[in-house]
Image 1 (cartoon, rainbow, N blue to C red):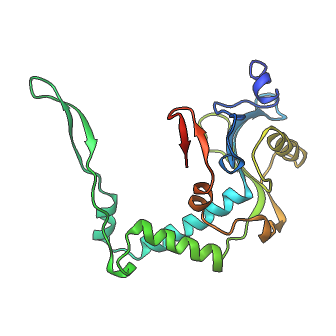
Image 2: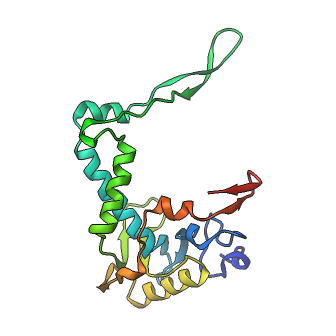
Image 3: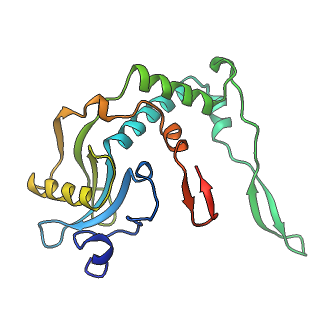
Amino acid sequence: MRRDAAEYGGRFTSHLVLNEPGRPDLYNQWFDFYFPGMGRFTIWNAEIVTARQAFWDAAHNEASSRAYAALGDADLDRESKLDFEPADVSRTGKVLTYRLVKREPVRYVQFDGRTLSEQIDLLETAIIRDEPPVIYESFKLDWSYAYGIGLRIVQDVEVINQAAIEAAIDRFLAIGETDWVSSEAVPRDHLPLVREQEALASVDYPSAQLGMPVR
């Protein structure tokens, strides 16, 4: 952490870029990082998400569950199957690499002619509008991690930045490094009214790789 103090402030470290120039706040809704616990040998392997991101995840997961539940076994097998074809072949005929075969999406009668992806989008929009998930600020421990102790943090902030991460660390240490769920739900007006893809599609930001605006 001392080596990364100039980038992360000295209280945590990460393999991710925290302060990417020009990156809009909507693209900074989660972050993975490590920080030391109160115990001498405790390392917390943490993921922090905004309440907005937790809301989007919950709505998408519920929509996906409902859509997949409407498919039969044969449909599920077809949706999960991946086909590959040779991409590069040596002079002797040996296949060097493969590429994924692009398939035409299947349109289902039970979805009124929509594809699985389109049905999930439709359900997700309806869930956000009519059955918005209830989100709570929380800390959730996960002891199954190979490195450190897993920790998922949900925080009601607009953007994940250094200040938000340090505030979450302070709060977690103050409650005694344990599971915790707020007694009050995040207010509905703090949460989005559209799907994540719709929100992100409304924002342009420069791509260093492409040298052009991307959505």
